[in-house]
Image (cartoon, rainbow, N blue to C red):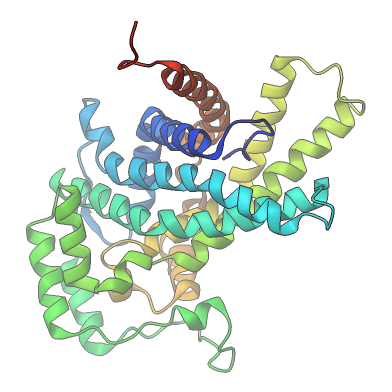
Length: 345
C-alpha cells in the first residue's frame, strides 16, 4: 500500500523530490512481480491458440517498467503537494487538523493521484501484452473479426436505464474500420518501446485509449485503502490496544495480513482492470459486466484470482520499501542542500 506522507517538518520541495524518488525506486524493485501478475491476467485461455514462452532472463520481466516508474514517480511526488493542499483545505478555522480530517484528506489525495497513473498503466499493460505476443502467444483473430462484423452481443443484458452505472459508462461503441486495420497491423507488429506503445494506443483507440479502465481502477484503489487500513487497524486494536508494545516483526505481520485481505477482496477488480486495458477489450466485450460474465463462463471462477501471489508480495513490501527510500532520499537531499560548491573558502 502507498503510505500517507509522514508528519514532519520537511519542506514541500524536498518532500516532492523524495516522494518521486521513492515511487520510482519502489516500482523498479517490485516490477518483476507486477509483470508476472499482469501477464497471467492478460492471457485469455478461451482464445489462446499458443501460450507465450516463459522468460528465462531477468530483462524481459522489466518490460513496461519505464511507464509504471514514471507514473508512480509523478503520483508519489504530487502526493506530497496534494496532501498538503487537502490538509489545509480540511483544517479547522484555527488551522488545526484532526484524525478524521487527515483520513479524508488522504482519501482525496488517493483519488486525484490515481488519475495520474491511469495513462501509464495503459501503456504498461500494452507493453506487457505485446511482449507476450513477441514470446509466441497466439489468439483467434478470426473470432474477434467476426464479432466486430456481427456486433458484440452480451449474454448478460446491460440495463439501459441505469445511465449512471459503471457498466453503462463503459458501454461499447462502434470501432472504425481504420482503427480495426491498425489493430490488425499492431497484432502483427507489436510495439516494444515506450513511445511505440503510445503511438499504438493512439492509432488503435484514440485518446480514450489512455484512460481505459479509469472507473474500475479508482474503485479498486478506494477498496485497497479501505480494506488495508481497516484490517490493519482492527488487528492493532486486537493485539495491541495501547499501541505501545508492538515489535517491528509484529507490524510486518499485521501489514502482511492486511495485504492478504486486500488481495483476497480486490483481485477480481484487478483482473477486470487489466482486461479492460488490453488492445482487444472493445472487440471481445460489450462492457465491464459482460467482461466479468465471459471470464466466469469461459475461464472459470478461479481466473478472477489469477496472479494473486505476485501481487501479494508486491503489496506487502511496497509500503516499507517506499518509506525507507523516502527517508533516505530526504536525508540525501538535505545533505546536498547544505553544500556550497561555489562558496569561497
